[in-house]
Amino acid sequence: MIKCVAIDDEPIALSIIQEYCNRYGGIELKCFTSPIAGMDHIKETKPDIVFLDIEMNSHNGVTLAKELPEGTCLIFTTAYANYALDGFNVDAVDFLHKPIFYPRFEKAMAKAGIFIQHKDPEPSARCITLKADHKNVVVNLNDVIVIEAMDNYVKIFRKDMPTVVPQITMKEIEAMLPEDCFVRIHRSFIISIPFIEKFSNRTVYLHNFPRPIPAGRKYITAFNNLNNIIQTK
Image (cartoon, rainbow, N blue to C red):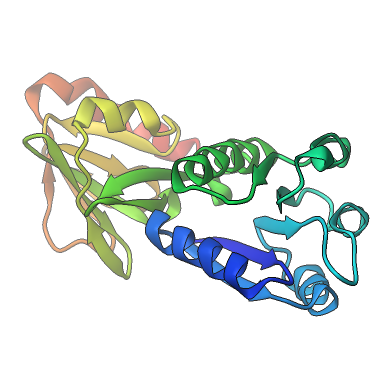
């Protein structure tokens, strides 16, 4: 879940951002019409993304941006295009000009995703965004136990979370996964190495998963290498 905060003294503007976040999916948003309350919340919770209006009645967003916690992904929202240069001078990731339309919001979120990934590439922060049920779903790879092929879809089983079924092929999703955490041992299965409980006789047993996963003949080398992989962890 991507944690976001939006600060704007216009409630209608906040409602639009809230609508877009709901439509995009995988976002937890807190909205504030008070810049002071919003900044206090940001400093306390350190969200992933901040949507910040520039021209507000009592405060200037560019000035407030200088007080954001280091590493905050900042997206400015404003009706005044002449502030764009000021926005980028404080390292804003993007600048959304009001009225904001959803396709432009999606592009800003794509930029934000790249920023977040590059800022903290450690395994604890690894996430991918997939399209499922006509909306974007952010999947934390730490939660993924196993991925199973289903024609042009895959079924992603996660620990203590609902299954996600995005329209993507095994080949495509395999290319998105870090090789140090995932291994394909069957044409229909990619398993998470941290969830391996035990393996023997070309069968892998995973924590928090009810059935064993077979190793396909084509992937027997990867299966035989599991012991070496686990020992290096």
